[in-house]
Image 1 (cartoon, rainbow, N blue to C red):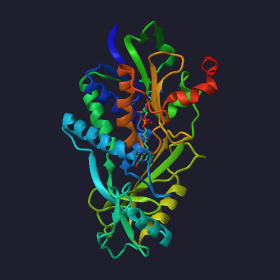
Image 2: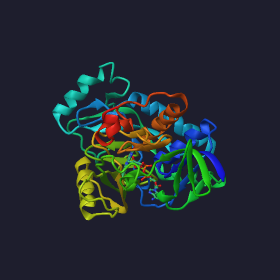
Image 3: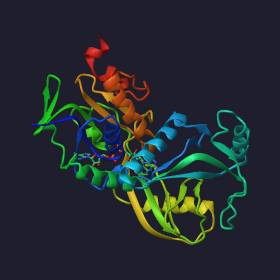
Image 4: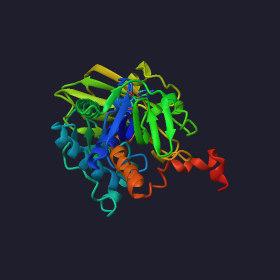
Length: 357
Ligand SMILES: Cc1cc2nc3c(=O)[nH]c(=O)nc-3n(C[C@H](O)[C@H](O)[C@H](O)COP(=O)(O)OP(=O)(O)OC[C@H]3O[C@@H](n4cnc5c(N)ncnc54)[C@H](O)[C@@H]3O)c2cc1C
């Protein structure tokens, strides 16, 4: 038998970040992943920023999550001798006079003043329309998620800490203080399988509200090299190539690109300005999203040492590092998991003995 502290099922944003967090604590692990390319993480645009634009509020815990995530990815960049994180300012083009007024009223508010500011003529581009002006968001940026995962995978392969295969749930054998899985024995199991948790016999009781997303890459020589948001985001990749996204759909959970999403993104893009462009790529994936838009983290309600890290929704880049760390601190130091993210918020409904302790 091969003995490790953890087996991690899944190497998307969640499993990758958990494995690096375990490295920081000198814990051993084996990851099991079939290395499919049709995952949420491979479709992810990788943008992070602290603002919920709909109601112009700071998004949940962003003051903690963003600095934590930026430090985390920078540490991994050093360890892997690579670059995948790029901090950027984000320019939000206002859609109405109300949005502009709301923004200006918040710029001086102590809660917002470190994150949003007024425009300062940065958008000096004739093709962009901004009749109601625009504002600037700091603490934003992009993680090149595919690169982060692939370079981490090369590192895990080199260390023999990943096995490329499908999960076999029937091979999980419970021991008094851990598990055997085929020829591996471990103290803890963590499921990080993205939207596939609905097929996991241990966690399929959890509610799920998956949301399909699509992005396109365009070639355009009129767009500025800036991260811009108005109805959609536009992010500068290589010279003259821009990532545009993303759509949200709950009624189609296939991983197929659609004409409908392409047309939606083109229409949003043309709402930002008059550009000539060519679409050179399109990607689709299904986000593992929950009804309350909070992650799902913690120990199975009935099986000791069996855990989950999932429900990263549309904020995987911000959530994965912080909640990987929190899960490990919970396991080893008994630190509380944030009650809004704790998997136990769903237990009462599904586990009788917890209903009547
Ligand atoms: C179009 C789109 C745009 C997005 N944009 C952003 C963005 O800008 N910013 C942001 O923060 N987030 C974004 N997201 C969300 C982000 O992608 C997710 O939050 C994140 O990728 C979820 O990671 P995960 O590890 O939970 O799941 P996944 O990425 O799905 O990873 C699960 C892993 O488990 C493996 N696996 C599953 N089942 C099995 C099995 N039976 N056997 C073996 N292996 C298995 C898979 O191969 C995969 O590697 C976007 C998502 C989409 C679809």
